[in-house]
Amino acid sequence: MSSNKMQQWFPWTEAPVIVNAPMAGAVSPELAAEVSKAGGLGFLACIADFSEGSHQVIKLDVDLIKIRQLLSSPSSSATTPAGHLRIGVGFLTCHPSIAHFAATALPIVKKHRPAAVWLFAPHERIRPQGEIVRLLKGLGTAGGEGEAPRVFVQVGNVAAAREAIADGADAVVCQGTDAGGHQFRRGMGVVPLLGETRRLVDDEEKGGHEGVCVLAAGGIADGKGVAAMMTLEADAVVLGTRVCYPPTFERINSKKKTKGPAYTLTCTQFTGRGDRIGEQGAACGRDCA
Image (cartoon, rainbow, N blue to C red):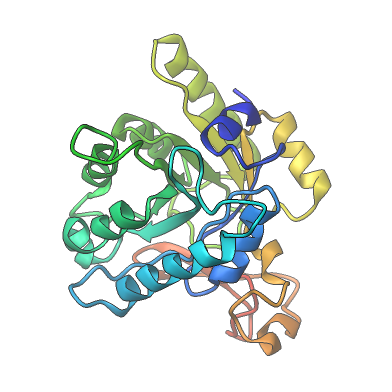
């Protein structure tokens, strides 16, 4: 597997394929659009509240309308030849309201047809991931319109990667503990995680399964980091904190100017998944999912 697979799925992208992390509360439509315009795969910020009338669900609908406007120009279309919007959306599936996904979020995906959907942090009791993947894939069946979006599942260990593949994920995002975003309780660095997941996917392909793309995420901030991940056979690379510097980043500028400590602390505010914060407790660009 190589970036070629990603480029087949997302024909506007250029190798090496760069993806921005769908950082909750941080990625604006402008930022996501600029990533896609530059030959990457832009993702809007993840949402977590799927309740009826949720402000987050309403905002997602509004943001996707704006994205279509931002991506449209005399020289390029906002959509692919298959009719997908050249953008991705993200869903944090840890909130109990995820039970309303089919009623609130799925219609928005069907309406706007984003090219990709990113899932992360499945609720431990409800375990919604498999059903959500099935619903999303159903958009490409006879009852849907055109092809289904590609489904990305973010993982922090090989067991989660194996589960994501079994659930039908098209792509597995290997986020190592090097990352500034939310973590799994049991995680590993991006290098060993990427390597072990790559072997897992290769073994699945030998068994006749359709190819799954493997993305690298966590601590990647420059061209050397991207090159290293591609050498380790990543199909694409995810940048999170690194994309927080342009003016299209939604957090206030004073936060971006804050100098963090030489180390970070990890807390378990979000159901056991860590959130890195500066020693002073301020959001310093390292607390994004």
